[in-house]
Length: 117
Ligand SMILES: O=C(O)C(=O)C[C@]1(C(=O)O)C=C[C@@H](O)C=C1
Image 1 (cartoon, rainbow, N blue to C red):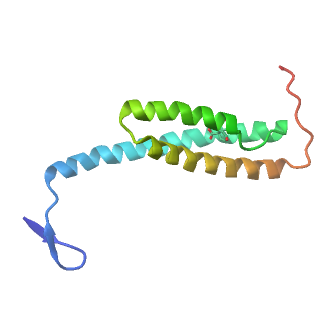
Image 2: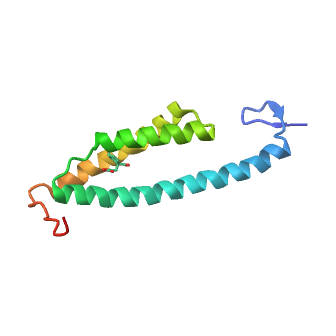
């Protein structure tokens, strides 16, 4: 079976199994967006606490912990570890950009003392 393509040519019809697979792909994409939205809510708070405490936006030691941990998880789960690291880096660089703008907004304020430490 064929069906018309956007350019007017005929292309083979999409097999029903691909349509079913796309439903699961859509569910996973939705979950990823929800998970990222939650992650950015937490990192926004981290950015505020860092700005209040005078801490720098990036933490290379924490980055290295994440890389080591996620490399192991990627290897164990069959995901290309280089892709896992690109994905982490893509997200964390956006977080650092947010942290920088939060820090700019806090500039000039005295650091908040942490009475529990
Ligand atoms: O854990 C921190 O210190 C954060 O600011 C969060 C986070 C992250 O998004 O996971 C972002 C920047 C740092 O370089 C490390 C980790």
